[in-house]
Image (tube, rainbow, N blue to C red; front, side, top):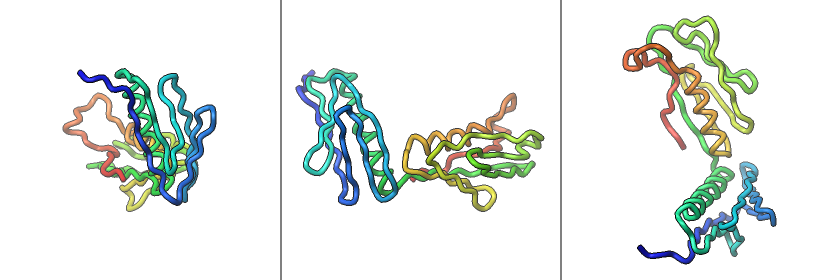
Length: 180
């Protein structure tokens, strides 16, 4: 097996986006939709500013350091995409007999009449995430931070889990149908 002496991942920054790197490893990326900040600290991996982008570099990498460099590259690319276009997850509510109703109340997503239950099911909406309901069954979760948008969509989907029933027969719930 060939040993690599250095791994470098280059993240290009578009013209309308600015990236700043502080000495303690905090990267701030600002774009038309907002700003995202994340801290990158490691003894083996480093982030450098290049002429029109950011460079993730690892010298004499082992398997874990290679994986960490790829993860940092993905985080930086997601930050750039988030501040330029943003992330949107689309979910759809499916029911067969009891029509469920959904509502957004502050930072809580509420599902009423799920399987005819009297107590509403709730899930948290994380800060910086926008949730909209259209056509009574379509839910759109959008924001600039991919992790927060994905976690909010997962919270909404998980709030309608079914216990003690056959999932093949009872397929009511809110399901993810599209990611952008």
